[in-house]
Image 1 (cartoon, rainbow, N blue to C red):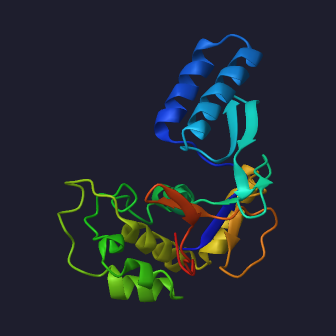
Image 2: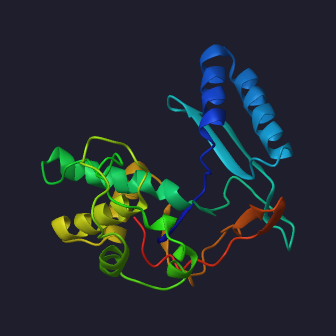
Length: 230
């Protein structure tokens, strides 16, 4: 579960749907910008969004802004240049790398679509202890992702982090390059200069502190080693 950082927080699906509707219905850029800002502000007031957002339509940037604090202790505000740990949103990058291999006939897509039947380690009772310890992809897969499959591949959908851990390891095996090198190549092609990987002890400029909400109270997110993730 390597740490990825990005200058843009991706909004919830419901919010994204509203933004798409606004972009399609508004004729003026200023009108779109104002309505997007209103929606984001409402989510922020309701405690549903803290971060930065960039909305594009075609080749144009329609909206760019930030809400909330990057660090609650020092009261440092988020900006459009703030970087964030993006958790399972990293799977889109793994998917892009795997799709390249699939197009060449070197991998199938069952695990990519969460339809391979691979059990998910996050349902284990000791998951928070597991993610605190450094491990290689092979160690995680061998210990926690190698039980019998839960259903015949391609017959059901069930979200699985293990499926993507296996895909990441397969990517490295098939290509002979590290996942980090593959990601650097991918993000360079896409022009994502603020997206990348770092270890748990790396100093990342402009990286926001991570928080979670427990029992209605915002607290710092628990420590995760991030030594393996795809």
